[in-house]
Image 1: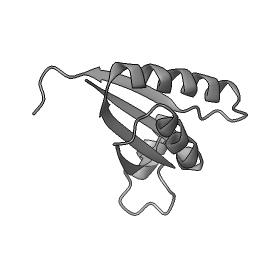
Image 2: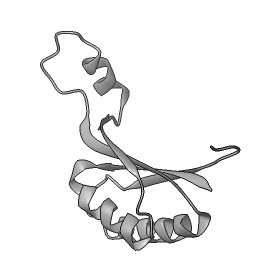
Image 3: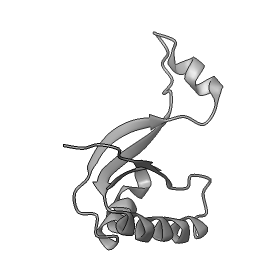
Length: 101
């Protein structure tokens, strides 16, 4: 069992859900996050009274799943990213699990 973590801009939420389904990853969690591309946005966001938004609306998805499902997911994400016309690819990482209960 491994932990897969996927981040994507909010516009790709339905696409990520479809990619998870195609990879037989049916149990997962998600959270809304703010994505940042450079240090200036972070500095602006740290200003307590800043009227400007600090980051891009994004989503984080994670699932504990089998390696076979992750292989299918990664291949699907690679294919999806090759067809993008934006500079916001879906990103994913895998973390091995040493112990679980």
